[in-house]
Image (tube, rainbow, N blue to C red):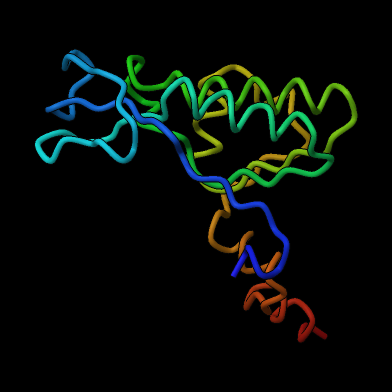
Amino acid sequence: NAKKSGIKFLLPKDVVVASEFNNDSPSTVVSVDAMPADKMGLDIGPETIKLFSDELRNAKTIVWNGPMGVFEMDNFAKGTNAIAQVLADVTATGSITVIGGGDSAAAITKAGLKDKVSHVSTGGGASLEFLEGKALPGVVALNDVK
């Protein structure tokens, strides 16, 4: 586990919840420990944005796979957009930022920051498997070409 390996593992502290999967649904911020059963989490909350942003500002290499919320709905895109901006900011100061996966690629593009990060790939699952050291069938096949 992460703790035994000395790896800091961050989880959200607060979330933006609403009763309906709708941009206009009234929302509120609650602690992750107090999520009402009749509501759904649609974005990370301000405390989590600060927590994640502060940690990311100290990183030299960042791999982002998966948006923070339902970024397609403007009222639930604040967390995703905030993290995207932090990634653009740290890239400008020399950090390496890799955005992996179709949803993350769409989110960084929607935020207008696609050209402000180091690399954007739509291969989310494949990118993570590559980082794990697993053989990728497409790459293996290239090695077999004569």
